[in-house]
Length: 607
Image: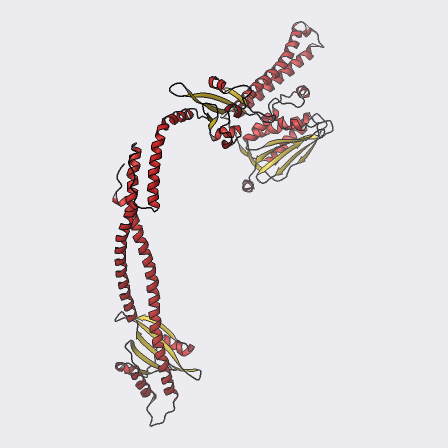
């Protein structure tokens, strides 16, 4: 096996994960710490200056409301002396402004020329108008350092009589933060270095025994069971190493019996085409796969150690020795009254090299469908033979009579010829129906679909029957007047309706009624045709769509039926992805239903 490279080893992955976890943790802590510290320093800086400004406001307010005489110093002089005494390292300049936005004092000795001038600062204007304190951080365009600007109102008896405008250097706070960040980055780098070293040492304690177990696994693959894994401790990895050594010993013990089991398994696999059952030399079940359990409808746990002849239900016909000598397949018929179920069992003996019988393999195949198809094929051939033999026998009898001289009798000959013609037409209809069913059964059968307004289409077919009917039968239509467009093969659905309506008319009594109904369901059209005939018994209702099935065989043949009309209708409806079924009340009539796919969205497009 190829050696694992360093960059793909679990050793490196473990160290990287360890270092990354520490790095992520320190970064999260650092970001939170630095953010909180920065907010705290800025807040302390601003509070310190705000407290000093509050004291300054009190002194200036007293000077601004004090009454003065001609001998007293002016307001500007008093404020100037107060401002000159108000100094700090972080404060750049302090200005005092009256209500007319006129500067009446500044702490900047070199900037005394602005005294008496009007200021345009927006913060001052807002303070004088609103009477609230305002501040913001700006960048000095010359030094590129950040400064903090504060505008605070001077109030007397609830009225704003002026404002103090303070300009302070806040860059020192951010400088302190940069120094703290540098210290934190250095500490992070040192911590990561120490973490990496510890991670390498810790990873070795895990990867070393794992490497030993890998080498032991390679030795086991080559058949070497003598090598043992070194146990470094009694933690989880140590317990794994001990378990690995125990596994090696058990594998060594099991190697002796592997060859016999391999032969048994090889025999099982060679016959595993369906359900498989294996027995010991006494005929008791030691293995059964899931398909076999499902076929026999048993639980795998309950059949173990049970005799194979009892499990298969053959105890009355076979013994285990008989099954060992059985060369042919055994048919197991589990059919019930309502449902056929047939299995075929094949048997294979498991023998050792000495010829001693070691067990029996039974392979089960479900042949229910195959038997059903064979039975349907036999029944179909028998029905076709019967349907053809009857008219042929009749025709032969009449033709023999005509050959013997009956053709000379003007009263008998036309009747004989008419019967012969009717039987010929009956055989032609039967052959045509058989050809139609053959086409429907073909895999290459294709429908020629087109969009058709079913309401108009259905009414047109009913009109044709109504114009040609000879019985006294009333037609009742329950068909929506709205357009109902469906995608169908018009010829095939015409034949479906023709077969159903023809049956309804054949079995309807004189003066009866046939109802035609179309219902719009959620995703389909449901078409129903109801007659008032003799009805169909409930036990025969499900069989009327089978080929050649007739409820009343004598009457059906007299009426010219082939027994394939409804079978053809069923195949054509299923080819359109629809369903067909029937309901009936004995003595009251029968209703044939079938459905066709219908899409409302397509209908809207046609509309």
